[in-house]
Amino acid sequence: MQAIGIVGFSNSGKTTLASRLSECLEAKGLRVAIAKYTHHELDKPDTDTALLMKPGRTIIGLSNLRTGGGEAMIHWGNPCDLTHLVPYLDADILLVEGGKTLGWLPRILCLRSTPELLAALPNGLDALHPELALASYGENRLPGLHAYSVEELDALVDLILERAFMLPGLDCGACGEKNCSALAARIVAGEASPEACKAVGSRLEVEVNGHPVGLNPFASRVIAGGLEGMLSALKGVTSGGDVVIRLHRHSV
Ligand code: SF4
Image (tube, rainbow, N blue to C red):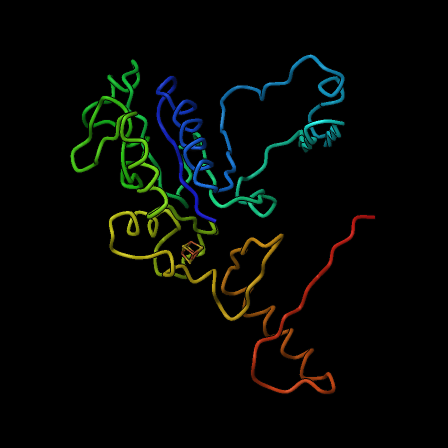
């Protein structure tokens, strides 16, 4: 799955851009997932389901409409890291609205004029981490960054499909960088590729719900060594070749 962040100060047009991009991507037949960071409580309309919600409690909502399909949702009443939720997603591309501090994916900077942005321009935009930006959107410009307008959405979509990526977010340092953000900045600068990440594509690969999960190289070696030892004790298992083990998890 590819991923791209949509980052900017308050009222800079992030939601509008996320909505427009998702429409364009879906028009190309792609499955889009959207994650939204907010400083406020999540919207909870005054419904029976909202009455059940409270901190620390998990609520599953299931709606089986007789016509037009149904909906499902899980509401966790505690904070969660987005990287822990990615394996649940069934999508080709993830749009992440907000999340200025996330360093494991590239971003589009929303630069519509707001008091915060105008106070930060031209040199105070470090909080938006422009080193992770593929482009900007809105009337303001940063040197060296192409600024797209609403008339150029198709070109922006093409750029995203060509360059969006997602690193595991483990910050394990196995790629030789101090964290995922440092490698992401080098990928954005054209100095490296996502394949430089050593936590995916190693000797041991783990997928959850079809999505590759990053493994700390140390954990990868420990698990792979344990599996090798177990397999060597089984009759009929020859050395060489790939081994596929599927773990079917059933809830009780
Ligand atoms: S090896 Fe991958 S997961 Fe580890 S720091 Fe580098 S990019 Fe991040």
